[in-house]
Image 1: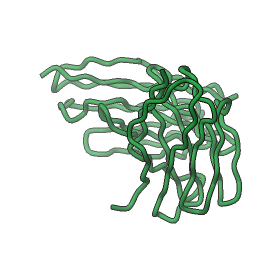
Image 2: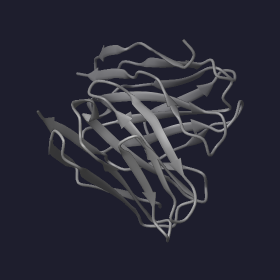
Image 3: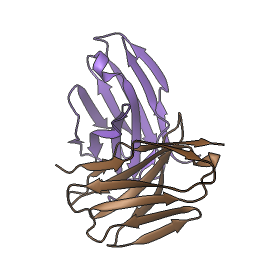
Image 4: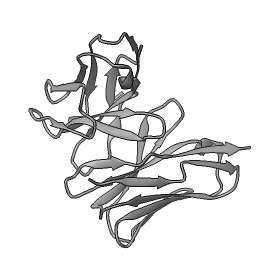
Length: 110
Length: 112
């Protein structure tokens, strides 16, 4: 079945620095979604990417979908304490089922 | 506020006890889902309901049953709780199969 791998599992970032989290699928995806979960909270939908090579931005967050539609990345610039949490990617295969990665947990040093 | 409502928020069960987790959405979404979240394992799909009247197994259905009571409500039942079912359970819904999911606030379940 479809598997979505996410790296790194943990990211410790100095406030103001940039970082990137990566998502890789064993199969071609029809689309990929990203979610953010604050500590003690629930996942919140951030964005969906559908097209090969697609790039979308939300303020300091940049999302990319790979040309082969098997990988994706989330890049955050000038990290702030409000960026703390776990970021999940979720890939949708041909059967429309969404498979979540294990997440990247981000902590920020002030 | 519009969204997905889960009850209860916390629950402690003894091994062998049964319980039902309730979920309701008021966004007129067709599809609803139950996930469990364990440390380091992300979100794993237990069961889902693509539309009212249908339910299907996800990745980890063993030990669970579901009921799609109507378009709004989707419940998850543990017939005989086991310690391995200690987890955080999230209900989610989506309007179309390709839309982002809206999650409830979760149920933190401990089985002792």
